[in-house]
Image (cartoon, rainbow, N blue to C red):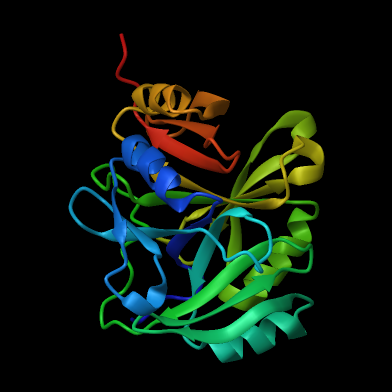
Length: 261
């Protein structure tokens, strides 16, 4: 697929129990979760939106692999090998790869200079990924990404050099610093960067999934063993955002309207 530099293209969960997590997220986000049709993918689960768009993968790492790390964000690149070299040259590091995923694409797991993990990917298909779509109708899609980092200025410098991102305004948060928006050109506003040191948030990439009723989604998460971490809080445009943890403690964000009276 032809990926735009730095666009979110996939989301992936490493969890101790992929099947149970699939049931949880199917109820939470309205996903259809099923094993990959490719036998060589080894039981990898694919999560699709109600209209059948693949948005995320769920897997239980093998016993010899590192402990489960929760959700990861995949960012598109035109050339994985070249991007991996540039990541190292910019002060980041490559933890795994570059490597090929049969019938899917080429990827590498990276750390930025502050040690935050992310994944770069170039898919093999002819069409670009639709995992991330910022429209009100895109239920079950990713709609926002968010980086908590100990050094937001250094993060903007790194990702700006890598992807061409710019700081596109910011929302002041008092003693917690500012919520600085990621931009590239006139139309690309995928998310924001904030200080993990000032906010107390774990240093990590987070992502938000679009849901039709945020209160109903929170209640579903809680009823199925998850917990509410933050929200629901109003955001520009009339929707609300929240963060929950699943039964294994992995955090994910939600965006959607409030419909309860």
